Length: 78
Image 1 (cartoon, rainbow, N blue to C red):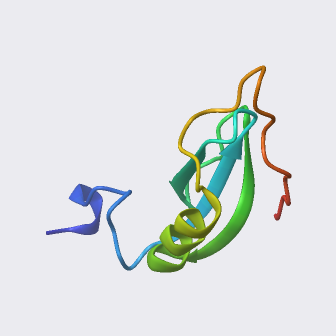
Image 2 (cartoon, helix red, strand yellow):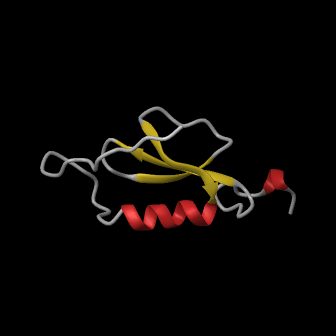
Image 3 (cartoon, rainbow, N blue to C red):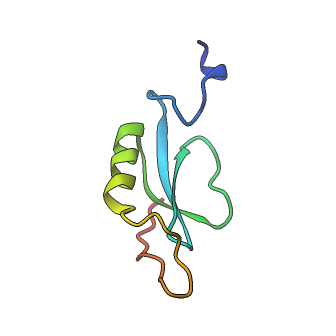
């Protein structure tokens, strides 16, 4: 399968970033794609497996932050 037809979120050979939004939700994001508004990069660029491990280690509560639950502390990276 050519690189152009590969799902950019499942390409094991690509570099990724871990993004975090104000509600404390994480996202795996291809490093070659611009970070969308409302999201901050908190890890990467790095290998897909390392980014998934970062998400697994830090996103322990899947419920989004709301009035009763503050968003986690942010450590943004470039």
